[in-house]
Amino acid sequence: MADLTITATSVVPDPGAKISQNIAAVNITAGQSVALSSTDSKKVGLYDADGSGEALILNGVALNSANAGQAINVMWDGVLTIGATVAVGTLYFGSDTPGGIRPAADLNSGDSVGLLGIAISTTKIALNIWNTGVVKA
Image (cartoon, rainbow, N blue to C red; front, side, top):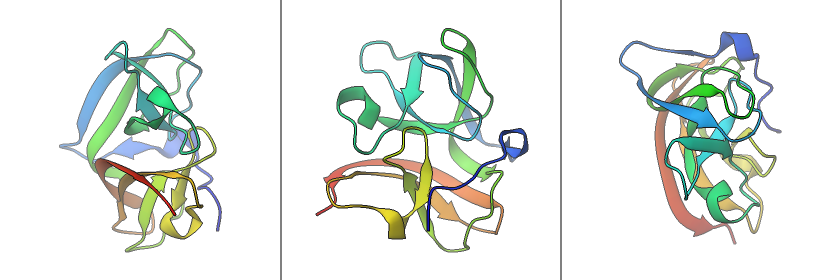
């Protein structure tokens, strides 16, 4: 398996989704996993399971594309049409490719384990962000 190939225009939250309004610290595309800045609670960058510092503070999934300095909406809880095909019952995590999303089977030794959620259909993930603090052995 590999990171999800996400169609940015197909990333859509279901009603009742929990969404925060942030500022992009870097260029971000809808459907990428994002990390919260440790120095500015309104800024987000790309999550990176191989990164360090704030790149490891998984915050959610970008709902729109934005250039650095622009407004971006980040979903962190609820059901999300992810814009890719997913396997029902599979857990999905932030990737070691900055901004990527991957299935549990693709976690590598040394990766930070940041859980995004579980696939509940072939197009939807129930997001419930969990920064485990665990590094895969």
